[in-house]
Amino acid sequence: MSLLQLTMLSATVQINGTDVNILSRLGLAILIGLFVAFIITSGWKSQLKSVYRQHGAADYKKDNSFKLSVKKDTFLYTKIEKREKPKQQENNPQ
Image (cartoon, rainbow, N blue to C red; front, side, top):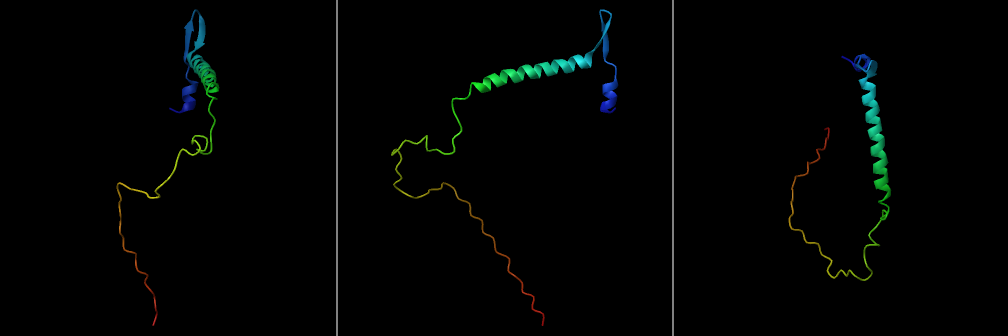
């Protein structure tokens, strides 16, 4: 059954003598819920303006608070893989 056939199905119910389309009411309820959720989350997002994106760590470091005395990296684990390079074959027609 295709989507077009599903939308053409009659999903009406009689309530107090009037025909009510359940699919249209369901779609309207979902749209209203999404709109209310958007308004609420927009309000929350507007409250998060106390910190702005920085492009470096200069504002987080205090002047003269970090002194590097040894310039050496220490690694706890190393993994070395050795592979032989394929030798180039020369084609010398004789």
